[in-house]
Image (cartoon, rainbow, N blue to C red):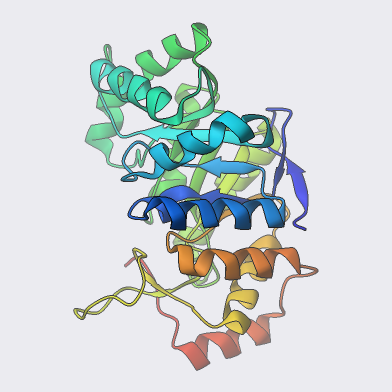
Length: 285
């Protein structure tokens, strides 16, 4: 089984490895239900989905009638205006077949122009705050991708005391001094304020070359269990964070298997050997 940790100030003890439901976006019903079986086997109790993840919310919605109390349920909106976010929230509630979402997040809010729009009058943030007052959601988060994500999350936290943030985190990213500095600043702020810190892209090997992709991931992933073990254990070695599983369902079970056997963070020389052996490269430049 996978260890649990208090998810910020929500009061929920979430498994430290969360199910990134982007893995469901293109699956048929039988394959999606097999993914649910895997989650139950490993005791995962936290699902992170988004309105933009294809059929993922619909698959999860079929599970909720029997398993709603088993999972802390998070979703996201890519809307930047009040109307867009409000409409997307209602679509998500319908697809998920629930009356309330535990954590609702502003999705990938890192571009300055979109950030200003979301926090402006009649912006997405107004819709999210209204939804919380109405009891449609319980907690509010913000997510981001790219090198600017930690710094933009700090900016967002100046505007509102979010309950959770999500940002990339892996061994190669933290070799970038600028990213490491901004990530550490964000992590310290989250720790001081009881904000859950979610991470993504733990098993990234590098960016895709211009050839057909072998996995349904935004990045070239590590695929051998031994390598995934090292990458996952390195992330989980930071007790401040949660790790979201891969967007490729074929790799999800390997990530969960690695997480279930986590004991300690691999040594620096071990990660350096992995870097050389698998030619790890920066995901963002």
